[in-house]
Length: 449
Image 1 (spheres, one colour):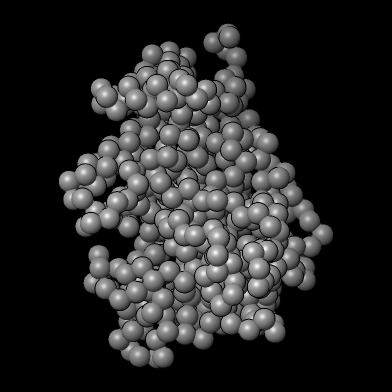
Image 2 (tube, helix red, strand yellow):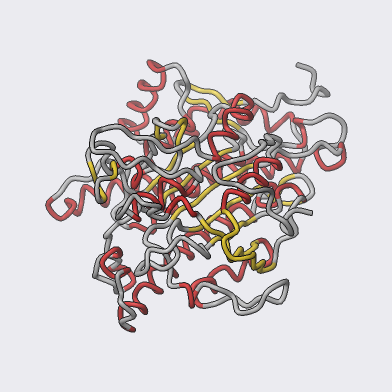
């Protein structure tokens, strides 16, 4: 290929069993690069879910519009304040009982991205609805190596009953390929790393993994020659971008190795975790989040879901001084001590999300940042964990969707506005317009410019 010809967008650095996809470089578009050529970067769409509701007084801004305040839970979002839109008043009616009785936790996760009431069955039958991420993936997924990525920090059961007669599949998944097929999430950062950067040829990939472990090679050692060759072809800005990207990949690899050594040294307190899953929950979330960022940056996928924990999770948080289970605390009955601890758990989760958003914001793309070309939704399918209510859900939408959103404000919608209206609008921005989605009643006003 001529040195003057643009690089293909699907350029990889290759070595034995390794295929490292690259971020968007100026050399991948003709003439003077992405910003000068007017070529739009792709829009990415991500959904991040937390269980057991929120302590809403510490979540909800008291002021609307651009002069909104950041309450206690959201104060960790200060570095990305101008990049987020806080949405109040949205409702998932199909998360309510609607004559189906108890099972609010299962319903809240099953409805979160589908807008469809999950089936409560005496047998093994499951039925929800196709989720918004998979509607988008079915249309734009062919453009990328992975149609979508499904991530989570807790595996959970996929069979049996987990909540008042509801199948465990509802509590443990938010992404649904169709009404009866949940998309299994990846919880192991090591396996996700190998999936993102391993070659598609299985034998070579396995050989590469074994050699890296035996000789303590970095994945990047296998593509060094290819990287040096590419570096000679591109301009100064692209070389800097390439070096920064490869450094980020290597840093993640170091963290995985350090985590695996800690697992061996500590012995897991009497139980065995799969190799690659950190002992520290925060590091687990950040490793998965960093790889989601890399997948967006390299256009390996444009669609991702991330469950920070399964719905109804009773995980404790000793790292922040909360040793009681999350679900148990969520039934607080207005006990001030329990409310304080719930708020601290909510702050911890928001801190991890803020970290991921800041990583997206730190990566230049075109004439803006990677975050500018994203729509990242963060929220829960329950509002108050004690009431198990599904109106006025805690929701943040981060990013500008390529300039279609003017963030940095708090929008308060009319009571009972369907959450599905937001999803219908997001699908429009992904270039996948639908006549309706879930229980939608129309597009969401006031969000998109």
